[in-house]
Length: 446
Ligand code: G6P
Ligand code: MN
Image (tube, rainbow, N blue to C red):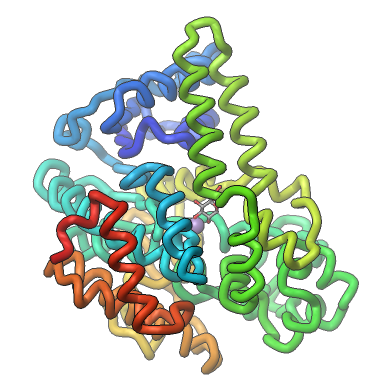
């Protein structure tokens, strides 16, 4: 089985390869093709993978190419994990937004819109090529903003593109852990929303909802990441546990201030950190795997550091440092390729799941997965406050898709202006000016 990874020179590729190395079953991936625009990044990551594969007799063969069409031909699965504009682009997304007093995070608010505007045209081009060159391939989209990018690709690939994110899984795992659930896989997590904009409303074990027990116990509630981030009182008011990215909404003022005051934005930190790693990989004597792992550990430890600081949440729990999105990706691929039926929280087309959205809107929801793909399960409606946010953000995503389609600057302004975290049409206009001035990838906006 052939797996093609777009953004194959990217920093998180060794996580995926590490997960593949642990799969020895019949029908596993035997061939990995890395595609990237940057040959140096490809050779750095290839070195890490070679060290990972040492001593594993059935390790998937790895090849690398800068030719996209060649990478796609004959692929059974395509992982799309690209970063249009690189981490320099991410840093610029943050800088321009923060200068206007709004959030520049890569998936939320103004930053997410800017990142979406330059990623959608590239993602659409990939989707069209997949449809032409590898029509039987399944595409698993990791590229942020994951919900929006998946929806853009689904217009060309239908249900054969599925978006993934590890944050709902991490959230479910943490809740199960504090509730003392022995095997988190046995719990049913009642979660729904958009990517980075969802809520856990229940966690059922043996048919009983255990979430009320958590909400009733301030000690337990304050003992894990989301409890520390949002505070016990707010979680009890909501009666649900929000995805960590909702911190940017519920505590927006504090988050913006913390990011403005930070010595460096997240994008700038990662840009410099990864530049050091890729530079080190030019030294043939360096241990690639060791350098990669040290860089990865530092990245994990500092994830959402400013948000945690404003909330006084302290360090991350050791159990939360392992990420896990490669596990979601592998479980999804296995379920489809080998009909290993399972349930995963994924980004798929809504169909009739949330009645307030149309059937084509990509949402994040538990899905049954089998050889026929991902099937969203029926869920209870969201409360009005959550529905309001979901509808507002989906409307913004639709303006982003329309702007990417038409190249209209006016539509791009509308996307920014309609976002609940952008508080003035004038700010939206200046954001479009600021972003088009720094991003060559936005030159299509006229
Ligand atoms: C979480 C999010 C991802 C994001 C990742 C890394 O897992 O769900 O969407 O890519 O964190 O965040 P970072 O700030 O380290 O790039
Ligand atoms: Mn994510």
